[in-house]
Amino acid sequence: MTLKGLKTGEKTLLDHVFWASGISRDALAAASSFSKTRANAAVAELLEQGLLEQTGEQMSTGGRRAETLRLSRSLGVLIGVAVGATGLEVGVLSPDLTLLAHHSEPADVRDGPVPMLARIRTLMRELLARCGVPPRQVIAIGIGLPGPVDFDSGQLVNPPLMPAWDAYSIRDDIATDFSAPVFVDNDVNVMALGELWRMQRGLQNFLVVKVGTGIGCGVVCHGQVYRGANGSAGDVGHICVVPEGPRCHCGNLGCVEAMAAGPAIARMATEAAEAGQSPRLARLIAERGALRLQDVAEACRAGDMAATQAVQRAGAHVGQMLASVVNFFNPSHVFIGGGITRVGPLFLAAVRQSVYQRSLALSTRHLEIQYTPLGERAGLIGAAVLAMQESLRRLEVA
Image (cartoon, rainbow, N blue to C red; front, side, top):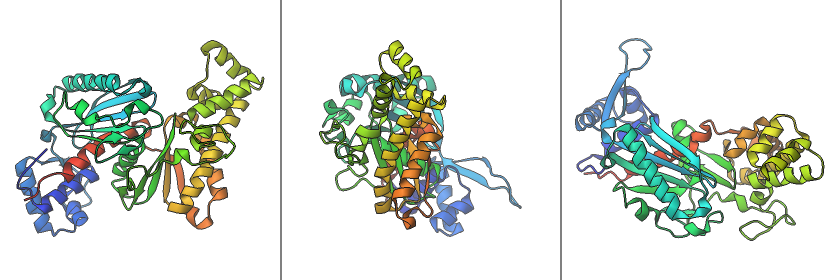
């Protein structure tokens, strides 16, 4: 989406419309600090150019009903890709982030970038065909990956969970089928972008923590995703919580990821089953050969004591790590996502107890800890937000 002759004020209004997810002219003028005359003139120009469109009327608060403005669907579509350690999801979305088509399936990032990205390109083509959209109408592609990403190059840097991806050119791979720009970021940064968009940038300082095969954290500071000097901000999974704990795949001992991520919870539950503490889990091991986080979550919800203790122990470790981060950063909210959400409220309660016990009173006075409202769609929505946000930033201004 490269447009010449766009004025700075028009670009500002486009950005506000995107983040507002539908907004009236008066509200747009107020949000952008423009006069109504200037805002209306800019909106008229953007409507004329086909960058904005009107979508019906908002509820009236007295007087004439206000029409809602949104980014025009004639601009094209966005593609969002959310890659996890054990699965992937691809979606096609309109510029206002309406989901038009999507597909998810199990996958293993350890298979390497070539086969996985080939599968992702295939899914992109299939979903576009389902929507009746040619590839040339793709505005941009956003991809979230479970590892540290150098945002400028779009490449992973020594990712512990997926070493074969180190320095692989994801953009060049996708470019074999698509000419649209590709933006790559860490999966939890992408989830944080999704939550930021959902709240229309209403929260300025919050954390999104993903607990799945690994543990990571997206940091939103002053309304922007904070990536740090080299893109590794929020890599909390390798903060030590038990110095004499098991060795993490990063090489250190007792990282919170080694103590509380999905595989660690499954390991604790397996040890309890083998010690005769859970006939239910023992039966599952006999049937399936190994426990998964989902198995422990189901047993926990059914009241299994061994599963419950494993979940509570993991929650306490995550809370121990978060207490230090909360003391340091003082966020207003902590949103927790990933596979751990299937456990239900027990894990959340254990995290909260540990955080409130270990953090300073001032840093937790107004702190809210909850699961991500976007749920399992946070990564997909966030990837599309990344694509649209970066496309708007790169619009040419006269």
